[in-house]
Image (cartoon, rainbow, N blue to C red; front, side, top):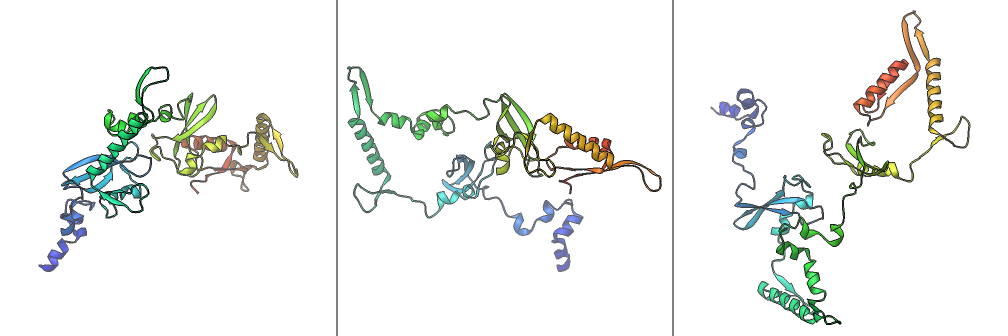
Length: 341
């Protein structure tokens, strides 16, 4: 019985004989794994929050049991982070429950050298007293012309400009909208607002082929961003792809056709039409000099050995099709692509 029981407990045997041929369900379970549940199953409630570290604003789900935080995970409904968290954000439970978290109010009086522990009520009373004192000392009933003011200079405006105050007293309780705005940020808009049109493109660097959106205004590129419709990159770009606007508009980009003749020591500036004619002449000359009508046995070849094509990794299917069609029509047979090599 021991051998039979041992074989029946073998995952591969259960996979072959059971209803789980892919081994992704019951076939791969052990007695231990069958009794394991997720860390969040026992939570009483889930609270939506935002990661407290950097300014990206990744959304989090805080799982609470008996009024204690038992787990913090990324919120997949967030359009910013889509459920992902960086290592610091993923470990933010330690910020709440870790032993290094200060659980008391510490106060150091003016000119004091040591910290004092205060209970929360005393600390809040002290904060209130200081606010009221500052309000009283800065109070203005009238201005110099006798007009009514009834204000305290600085304090009221300072408190009203405080995002936490606007978050508590306004309609934006989560602090993701008006409460978080400043005068400067309220007047800001995305860099792409002024674009006349958007052109779909592909990142010119590596062979991954991340899609880009090129924003154009007055026939000049003003911004390049990832295309969220791309199944490859889903709107994301690496640092080089994110900075590819510099490749287009940077001062190091050559804006003219430059040519150095054979044995020449200086570069010459050419207009585009002249340069294209020179390229066409050289292609036709190389095709003619390398042309083969037949081989040594008299078999028809009709090809040129003087031209070859090596495509780049970021050429899309349509561009590769046109290149293949052109070079095949010219009689070239050495047609290859860098991404395939």
